[in-house]
Amino acid sequence: MTCRHVAALARLIVFATALAMPVRSAAQRSAACPDAAQQYWEHFRSAALGSDVQLVANNTRFPFKVGGTLDSSPRKELSRQAFIRLFPRLLKTDPGLSPTPTTMRALVSETKRLPPASCNASGNQIRVGTWVFELKSEGWRFVEAFVDD
Image 1 (cartoon, rainbow, N blue to C red):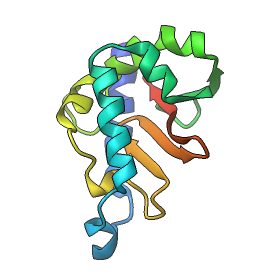
Image 2: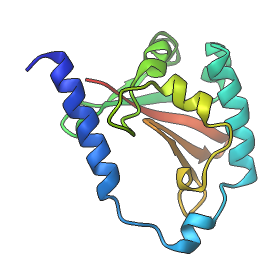
Image 3: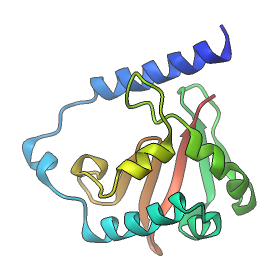
């Protein structure tokens, strides 16, 4: 299998997994993301789209976790410096939400406000494509991303 075939298969697996997820109740679907999460997202989104990697890193928890799109992929923990070097690749990663390849940069650009489905029922985690954010003692932080293998 070529890298292109593996990437296409990975996108298909992520897409199929998203379709197989349990349907949320009407109450969970209608609950908005917390205001603090929306404010964090606006700030983070602006930094990411403006390629302000230092500001993105300031809103990230270290060690930062990175995994592949396949469950069998090894997970790594990155320092701030390693994260800064990796961030351009994170923006180019396909979020795997549609059969047509796209990028996290495009998804971040389109996501001006967090839809309710981005936030968990407890209000302490946000998922946007392949990126995970959590509410920590110091506030919201970018904690994990999944990249194409």
